[in-house]
Length: 133
Image (tube, rainbow, N blue to C red; front, side, top):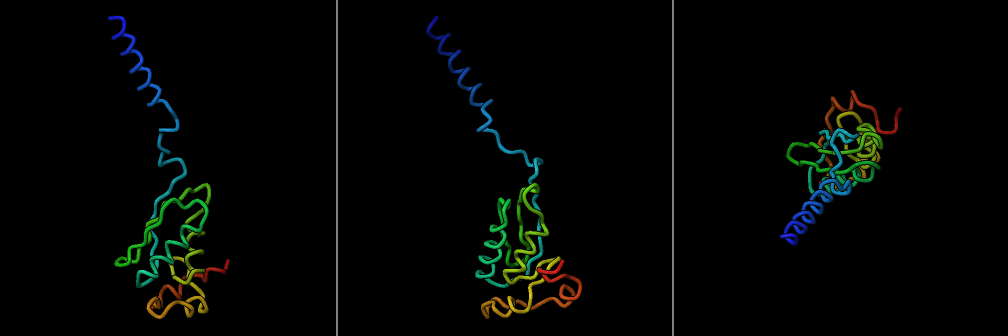
C-alpha cells in the first residue's frame, strides 16, 4: 500500500511540474503579438514567394501567408519589434504595392513578366512610395 501511495504522489508531482513549467506555456497573444491582413497586389506563385519572403525578412514577423485570390497578406508580428508600416515598406521595396505604400517604377519594371500585376490608379494616387517619409 505504501508503494502505491508513493507512486501516486510521484505521478502527481511530475504532472504538476509539467503544468507549471514556463517552457511549456504558450506566449499569450496579447503580449505584443498582432495579427492583421494587408492588401498586397500580385499575380502568381512567384509573387507569393517574394511577398512572404519580404515579410519574413522584417525582424519580429512570426508568420506571413499571402492569399493570391484575395490579394491579402495575413501577417502575425511582435508589435514591440516592428510595425505594419515597416512590413508594408519592405514589401513595396520588393516590388509589390500595398494598401499604404507603393513600389517605385524601377522595382516594378524589374518584376518577371508574369508578376506585373495591374496597378491600381487609386493606390498610385493616394499612397506614398516606400522610400518617402
